[in-house]
Amino acid sequence: MTKVITYGTYDLFHEGHYNLLKRAKALGDYLIVGVTTEHFDENRGKLNVVDSLMDRIEHVKETGFADKIIIEDHVGQKIEDIQKYHADIFVLGSDWVGKFDYLNEYCKVVYLERTRGISSTMIRRENYELIRLGLVGAGRIANRFIPESHFVSGLSVEGVYNHNLDKAEAFRDKHELAFATDDIEELFSKVNAVNIALPHELHYEYAKKALEHGLHVLCEKPLALKKAEAEELFDLARAKHLVLMEAVKTAYAPGFIRLLSMAKSGVIGEIKDVEAAFTRIIPDKEVREFTNADYGGSFTEYGSYTLLPIIKLLGANYKSISFRSFCAPNGVDIYTKVHFDYGKAIATSKTGINVKSEGQLLISGTGGYILVPSPWWKTEGFEICYEDFTQNEKNYTKYLGDGLRYELADFVAAINGTRDGEDFKLTRSESIAMAEVMEKFLAERNK
Ligand code: CTP
Image 1 (cartoon, rainbow, N blue to C red):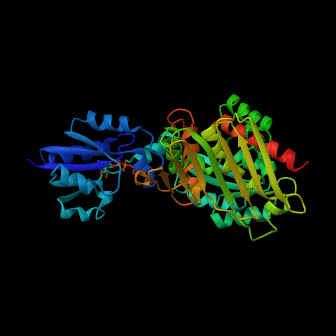
Image 2 (image 1 turned 180 degrees about the vertical axis):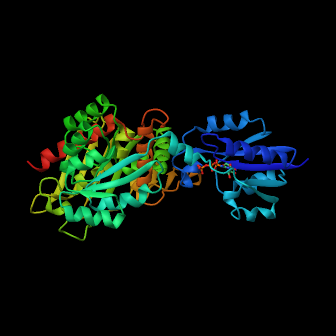
């Protein structure tokens, strides 16, 4: 009996997939098809898969060609499978020519001609209208945004707004965008979604304007500096059936999501303490973090990161909150420590722009602790530790590039309605809770 094995994502199952499976089956007597998991696809940078794993398996099954369907979830698995199932032939489409020659050591490798003119990527593009995105602001974040956007299909960054036209034009030229403007109405009229990357105090105003204009909004953190403002923005988005997302990149990173679900599933018992730190000594003292006396400082800059695990793990119903800051002569905090008391648990946030500390996230429980070393906000590896250290366990999930691609992929899926279920990654009430902490902090600091 000749056994044939092949692999694929099989998203939005199409004729090309059908033809390949049919020909693969014809090469032998028994066909094994490996279907990739979401995690595996995410790790290799495929962020736009629409169909769930179950649906993709079902579609492969319906062809009637597969004698066995397996799930592919890690690099190197092909070698294991070929040996385990005694596969004689490994098949893949011609788009992969050469890439799997190393498998010749285990079985025969055959690349079959790809069906022309069709691919999942193409169908995704045709099924969903291209999201034309405008950048509001041309600063540091906006610069990082463009290269990351290239990893997300279905989205095109069209133009940029800046109140200083020279800056906007320089940004347009650097990133080869279609237009630059200092007229926000012009930008709004040319796009259907925006990324707001302005100084903190302008987020609310511009997010509101964009929503009123009927545009989807991905707003840099903090979304708002007052609870009522955040509520108003979400209400407005809901009333107008628009997507509003706060761009706290960590919330959308696969490693962070994994960390949260492990912590919540009780592996370290009851969570008693969450300590999150994000500090940096920013060398350039002329940046807005230092010069903006009203809204600069460490907590408004990095607090959205440190609040994220605290609120995700312990909720927003803290019994008390207290702030302690060291401030520069103009009043901005160069270091802030926030204490949360939840009664049954406590939490601490440490942020600094001119004080350096260890940038770790430490979650302590009645059965052990989870340590995510610096930079935990780009969550990759973390360790679950127990009293009996022989039981300790290391976890690793890739964090690709600057990580903005994850929030962008989620934004695109939310607009296209292809996101499975509600957005649990950063909910409306969590964003509002973060705005409330910002409001309390600024009221006290600027007293
Ligand atoms: N395939 C094919 N002809 C096509 C498309 C895919 O023969 N027109 C083959 C691929 O070469 C692979 C298998 O089908 O062996 C599964 O491919 P997959 O990556 O799931 O499909 P694509 O349509 O190429 O997906 P994407 O656009 O997301 O890369």
